[in-house]
Amino acid sequence: MFSRFREDIASIIAKDPAARNAWEVITCYPGFQAIVMHSWAKWCWVRGFKWLGRFISHIARVLTGIEIHPGSTIGRRVFIDHGFGVVIGETAEIGDDCTIYQGVTLGGTSLTRGAKRHPTLEQGVIVGAGAKVLGSFTVGAGAKIGSNSVVVKPVPAGATAVGNPAHIVKREAPAMDTAGTQLFSAYGVTQNSDDPVSKVLHKLIDHAVAQQEQIEKLSAAISCAGIACDVNLDKDKLSSEQINSLVD
Image 1 (cartoon, helix red, strand yellow):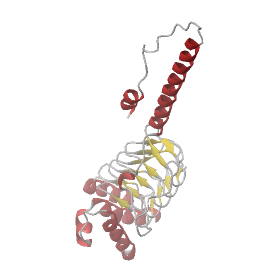
Image 2 (cartoon, rainbow, N blue to C red):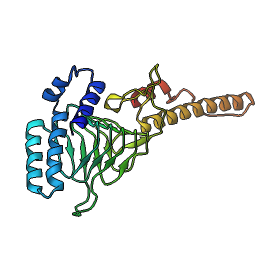
Image 3 (cartoon, one colour):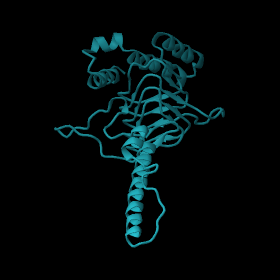
Image 4 (spheres, one colour):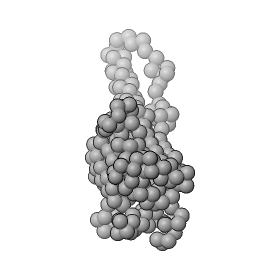
């Protein structure tokens, strides 16, 4: 148990530049404290002391602002950053090296007792602040959930989900530093992580402007051929810069 806690502390120090030393993590990081108390509650829960497990979970919520059901499963080196308002349901499973930020809910959408109702986060998942992951599906290894996203369907490994309801961004190669080590994406924010709907709208706007230019050329060619073409080319002319600025 103590070796596991040492791993958790080292992971927090590696992921949070504000963490200066182990003593500061132990005494001042509610995410670490909540995970320690969850281990106590889980010990009671699996041995049949259900009420005691729930009571320890309740005390942890009062002290840390983080609610973790004692029936949930949490892997090694899980970092709950800031953590206030985090809710993790009974059948949720969180893999190793996952990072969860404040206001996150891993919730269930089924009322069936004894069934798997909450999501599974595989290794290395990052869930941004305020995100809601709702349902008994899997978020693949290395996936990222953008802040305030509402995820109600599976997320492939390595993909990014953003928006409400969340849209899946095409998987991209992870960012690396000069030493070849994968960079940690705080809050799940990565470069070029625009909303996929916004990207599609930009493409549609550019396509419409290209069509407008082609129509203008055709109209000019028809006029040069001596064919009357009663088209006002200057009326309601599209400006891609102006419309794209409204979509951003």
